[in-house]
Image 1 (cartoon, rainbow, N blue to C red):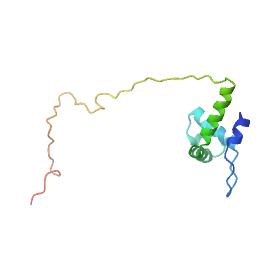
Image 2 (image 1 turned 135 degrees about the vertical axis):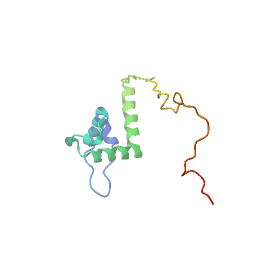
Image 3 (image 1 turned 60 degrees about the horizontal axis):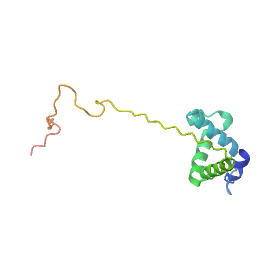
Image 4 (image 1 turned 180 degrees about the vertical axis):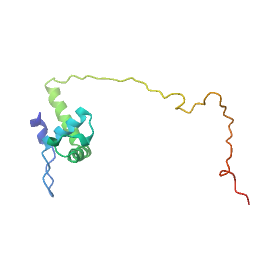
Length: 124
């Protein structure tokens, strides 16, 4: 898989330091999403979490992820190796009636609010 992805990765910047290993950064990003852990919990052997997060965002902006996905899908499609599994979650979560602003038992809404001394108009 890496042989297919490596040519699609961005080159090192012209100015500044060389980037950390792309393969290790990809592993860090995959680990984060596979475990659903916070970035700060990234294991030390995968490098600093700031590097992985910045690279994830940068590659999303410059289109690297789209190129990788298109290449992997094209290769898998040519080999008839795509098996689409779709999972749809139809869960409905509703708030309790009190959370939605419903009136409580025994109270009536008169439509007018009482005026407190700090809301009252100033006397001239």
